Amino acid sequence: MTKFIAYFRVSTERQGKSGLGLAAQHRKISDFVSRAGTLIGEFCDVQSGKDDSRVELQRAIQLARRENAKIVIARLDRFSRRVSFIASILDQGIGLVCAEMPNATDFQLHIFAALAQEERRLISERTKAALAEAKRRGTILGSNGRNLAAKNRKAADEFASQLRAKLDADILRRSYSEIARCLNEAGVMTATGRKFFPQTVKNYLGRAGE
Image (cartoon, rainbow, N blue to C red):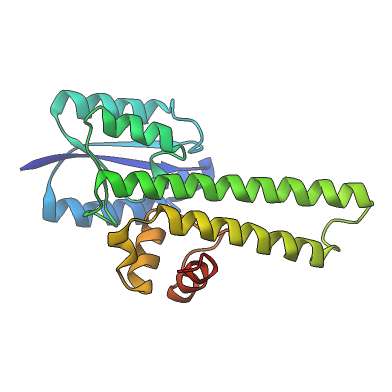
């Protein structure tokens, strides 16, 4: 029977104390493990996903190595926000399973992690550019709607092209609903920071010239 190590992460102390977000992660992982194997350990960090030196995460990785177990997470973004770190773990032969998308291959996990990282980069660049433009024009932030709309459209076009290029043929053969579900389960958001819907996927792939 496959051995699993559960890893949970919340971003703030308030979420950790209240259980906000944590309860949902526990539920998803428990439901998965009950069907797929046995749980031999649980680890939880209350820390930003940007820091991959998280104490409990490192303990989970060490135990996975010793016990030849797989690390199970509710969502990919609960593990790490850097595709290079996720790739390094997979390259070491440590199994990583997302409870919401248990059939995803290592290759697909790479793709979803890369998309999530690129989406965050685009949002950051768009925000910095918008703030710089507002400062240059002496504009009160929030009053330059047309300029921000144009920047959002450009970012959406760029993200759409990258989305289309990185999704493999197997995923693209699925329905818009299935693609949206896979992206949401992997923690990938749209260029405007929202979750995917079937129509959203259709619009993005249409932008990319599907």
